[in-house]
Amino acid sequence: MGGDIIRLNIDPSNRREQFRRTVIKGARIIFNDRRSTLSCRVRDMTDSGARLDLSTQQLLPHEFELQVTGNPVRRCGLRWAQGNFVGVSFLPDAV
Image (tube, rainbow, N blue to C red; front, side):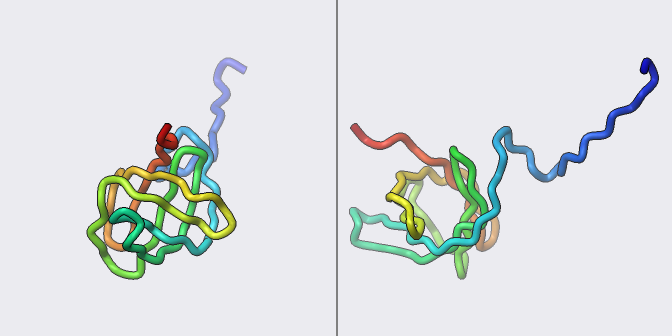
């Protein structure tokens, strides 16, 4: 066993510590004191965040709410943006 090589089938583009579940669900980004909304799709999700697909590039606030179809509203923080895709982390609920 000393010279055995073990190859792991790990996608190098997935640098996350958590398993990313691929989903395609409709969602709404809610901001501006709940006066403004923007439709999007959730492309994948972990327990700590999600990747969203917007129909066009958008400027978003640093924090907003996300309503994924069939799920409760979650507070989110914007982490990155590239083209029509944005990454968000789920924030703890306000106390």
